[in-house]
Length: 441
Image (tube, rainbow, N blue to C red):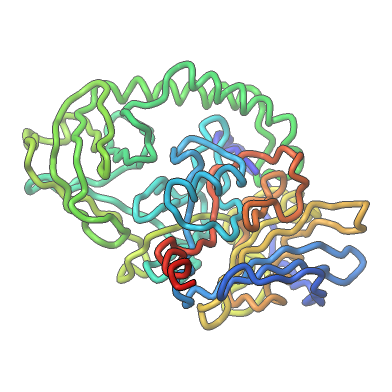
C-alpha cells in the first residue's frame, strides 16, 4: 500500500471513536510449529463475513528467537517482494527467516518508508508522518507501540548540530546522515534511476485501487515528486561530506563515536560500517574536522529514551491499547473512508500483556472461492484482541499484504507476482543457535 505523501489536500477524518466490533470466534484451520517458541496458525473467523487470518506467534524469550527489520535491497529507496527479501536476508546474515510480513507504508516515486524505520541500530528513516504509531524493539526484542519521534545530532568538536534527516535531503541547510541504506555513494540516485522509479510508480498507480490511506496519486503528483527528487540530488553535490566509521555498533538512545576518514565535496563513497555526514560549509563555522578526529552521532526517542532500541517500523492506526480494541484512525490523522471501512487484506503487529509473545498477522484479501472476506480496521482490531494482543497496530496492507512462512507465501500461489514492498518484519532464528543445534545432533 503506497502513501501519497506528495498530496497536501485536506481529507475527511472520523468524527468520533468507532464503536468496538464484537470479538470474533477464531477457528483453527491449520497449525504447525516452525521452531521452538514459534508457531504458525491459520484461522477462520465466524460471522456473516468471515475472514482467513494467518498468524505467527513468537516467544521472544526463547533462546535464538529474534525480530528483525529488513530493508528492501538494503537501500532506503528500494522495494522488493517478500520471498526474495527473506532469501537475501538469509544469505547475507546466515539467520533462518521463519516468517516475514510487510511493514511500513511507502511513499510514491522514491519508495522511502513512511515514518521511523530502524534496522539493527541504524536509522533508515527518522521523519514521522502525522500522528502515526510506531513499533520499537529493544536489544532483547521487547516491543513498545507508541507515538515515537526520533531526533538526531552530530557533535563535531564543541558544536552539536541537529540532524534534519537520514538518507535523503529535503533542503540546502540541514545536516543529513547517509548510512549503508543511502547507497554506495552520496549522492546515489542518477537521472536514469529516477526515471525507472517514475515508470514503476506510474505503472502501479493503476493497480493501487482502494487500498491507499490517502487520496489517489495522480500523474501530476508523481511528476511533482520527481522534480523534488531531482532538486534534492542537485543540492547534495556542493555539500561538505564527512566520511566516518563507527567505533561501536550504533543503536537508538546511545551515542555512537565515529572516526573521521576523510572530508570532501561532490560524490563520495559510503564507508563500510560507517556513514557520510553531509552539511553546508556554513554549518561548520570553521570547525572542519580532519582525518583521525572523533565525532559523535546520536539518535534519541521522545519517549522511553532509557532503552536502547535496535529495530523500528511505523504504521497506522493503533488497533489495541492496553487490552482494549478499537482503531485510533481519527487520533492519528488517517484519511479515507475506503481505507477504514472496506474489507481489505490487512497486516498487523501486536504483543500479549506479558510482552513475551509477539504476533505477526495477515488477513487474506476477499476470496469468493473460499467464501472469505478481507477485514475493516474495526474487524482487524477485534481479531487482534481475540488473539490475545494487549497492544497492536496496523501495518501496510491492501495490495501489499503478504506473509512468508519458511520461504513460501502463506496464502498466495507461488506463480502470483506479489507487490514489492519497502520494509519487511521478520521472525528469525539466529545462526549461532542453528549451528549449535546442528553440532549437537
